[in-house]
Amino acid sequence: MIDVVFYFQVHQPYRLKRLKPSDNIRRLDYWDTPLNKLVAERVAEKCYLPMNKVLLDAIDRTDGKFRCSFSLSGTVIRQLRDWVPAALDSFVALAETGCVEFLCETSQHGLPSLGCPEEFAAQVELQRATVTELFGAPTTFRNTELIMDNAICQQVEKFGFDCMLGEGADALLGWRSPQVPYRPRGCERLKLLLRSYSLSDDIAFRFSNRQWPGFPLYADTFAAWLHELPPPAQFVGLFMDYETFGEHQDAQTGIMDFMRHLPELVLQDQDFRFRTPAQVSAEREAVNELDICDAVSWADEERNLSAWLGNPMQRAVHDRLYGLREDVIAAAEKKPELLQHWRELTTSDHVYYIATKHHSDAEVHDYFSPYDSPHAAFATVMTAIDDLANQVARVRSSREPAARRKR
Image 1: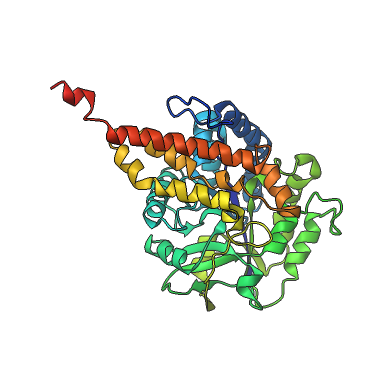
Image 2: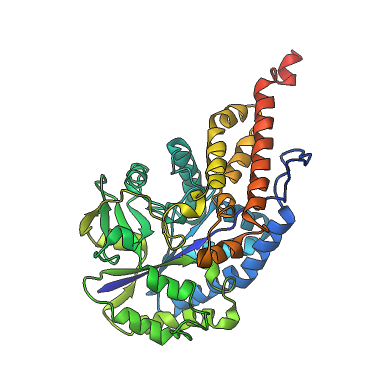
């Protein structure tokens, strides 16, 4: 029996205004609220609402045999609560079927796992509480952009998770299969489920590419590819951005019809079933230990950290931001909103926009970026960080609050 594991990542960042060092910023006014609201409403209309209905219908038609999983970043949850509550309700409806698992991640979809373990733990606990309130207590973890190494996996195990998702990168696996569970080195209990990147990207990136030899991709063709998986496959991890459906690839490409027809076609072979990550983790043993010496992610051709920390500008932003953490936490005792704004700046998209890559990777970065250039993105985010640092310094250097001084 081979398990088909669909995992969908749902995320929208809080995009910054086009800030310049000469701007006179007032009251932590960093965020482009009209743009963020517009994008949230558009993506909900094009993707979240119609695709959630496709999945609900698939669960109903198959009597619960179709199963899948999601991770909603804390930032997108707050946006949907504020601007598109019907879309958030539709995710809750999926959870209520009992056929959909909701995973945990960091609350701000950030990079605290890279050198700031205290903030990593804090954001995971914030997100765990949010996911538990909406969808039920999570047992599977997905780090931002599937970033993992031995140390990160060990910390995730200490957080109490049973299962973690990762990227089945060739540089990591070599000759080994991504389609069996692994145990990360140094972990005693955590099971690692990896993405089958070629099959996942056939849907996420190549589906609407008319130059791709596999175009057009029909559901029966893809189901046949799954049915031909060779041993030792125990599961196939089809992990992708949820915005693949209707937003990155318009409904007119046939992407929604593809997903509408796929479940029954997969289930025609009795040796295949749909499972959530938690189910695979509970039902299958790790076949081997996996030594993840160098960090792996699911981004770009390198599948490493270069999408976020690949140039000096990105590293400068990352170091400056996390270097402020202790001062921000101290200042937040007097002005709590400072911590919330600092955490929104930790969202990984802000450094992703600063990438200076070439060829196909550059095209992907440019597609997502609201800026004219990486240097414009750098100027904007550093302006916000510098302003926040100045406000933190003023709060920390100020005397006791006015109410106390009047006594």
